[in-house]
Image: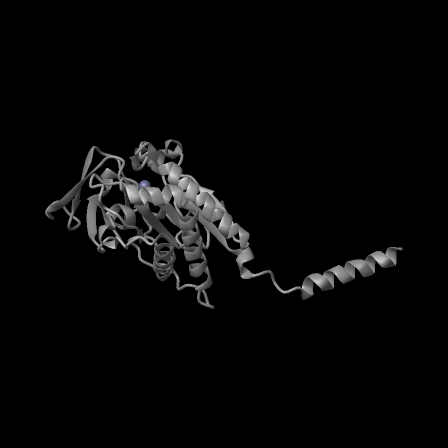
Length: 302
Ligand SMILES: [Zn+2]
């Protein structure tokens, strides 16, 4: 009897070894963020965004549209074996996935504005650009909407959930990220599309994500640009940012208490601040900042 069991165990072992590896999709993990969803629960480091409830028009709130489409897209992706996290406004610290897409709908006082746009972070990386292009292609096709890329804002490119250098509750440095503005909630035609044709749009999001996942080069994506060494939080009412390390250099900008910046190095009393936006370098006096090392944090899986 025992021998039968051991043959059976051996048979099952051989069977499991001989089965083809489940499609690589089985190991893919994707985060779909429903923009603004549960923004009131954002952590202290993002407390200024707790009131950011997004666009609203004709009694429809952006967060509900975003969540609906994120959940529908998740169904499509799960059906082909992708593991999907539908995430609220709060991203788990250093969230790691094969792709992260933040789903939003736009709003504008000009109700005639229509169209969609997709952007990635300032710290541009091949994988993020490929994710943007894949979403642009498939979401554009599914929605039939025109590309509105000329209105990509600095807020989109500096979106907090990609700003791994500034916030703990953001995607990991090596997670490709994109933000999709699906259309204008303030435009009646776009709004109808997002509410009555949600499934079609969700399919476009899922197709774009799959196109991106399948486009990964055999040796993986090139490494992302490194993050700066420190996160610097302004601890005085207003801090001067100067063009060089000393009070004789002109003040280029002032930043308020609580503002988070990225810092490359500390040189004496001066901190060298860096921004991926246009590669600007600014300096601030060390006494105005609280400094924390960025790369000490262990990324978390979920
Ligand atoms: Zn939004």
